[in-house]
Image 1 (tube, rainbow, N blue to C red):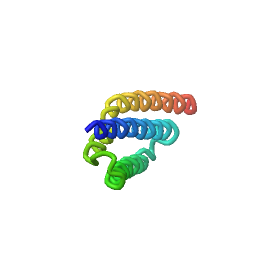
Image 2 (image 1 turned 90 degrees about the horizontal axis):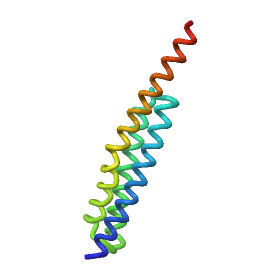
Image 3 (image 1 turned 90 degrees about the vertical axis):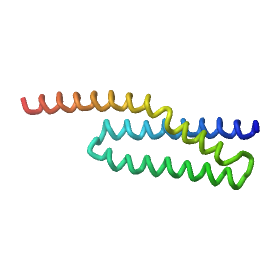
Length: 109
């Protein structure tokens, strides 16, 4: 049973890394080209689904841990930091919007 828990913790850690990568991608797009954010959302979702599929098939093929434990860990790793990263992205978006307004106001005046 311990190998299942260890597998879930490893999958959780990998999920946290994927969530952080998704945050970095989103932050960069919000700052540089916010009009393309909807496209990045699709790419982020593909990355998450690919990670979940890879986690499942790795669990099935290696049989080192039960795939359901791995999936629970992976999903928790992808979802739990979402609250924190969403709040940070909202602040980044607000700041980027203010910066664009200031640049637009100076260019017009």
